[in-house]
Length: 105
Image 1 (cartoon, rainbow, N blue to C red):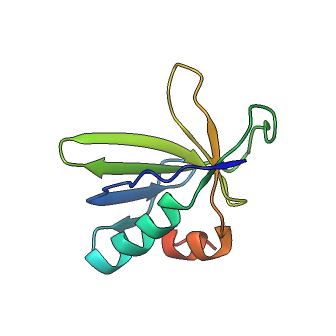
Image 2: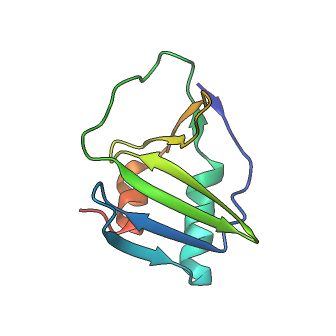
Image 3: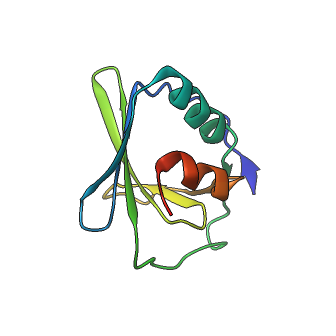
């Protein structure tokens, strides 16, 4: 694993469950700062370290300026950019705290 320390620069994060139901919107500066702290500390996984389909995928829509990206996240702390191309998978260092921030049980 290697650290991926690029800042998210998120202005808003929308958290949705597997059915696209809204869980939480993160748009307050204090929560965005906490989100960014988790985001910059995520680790990039080597290609085959974690390759399984989760049945309860959370969608993270991250809005930065006029751009938005969607990540697929599971509660164990693994996430991947939603793309038609192959993208690397990442792991959040503290999934328990991150899940709490996202409003996940």
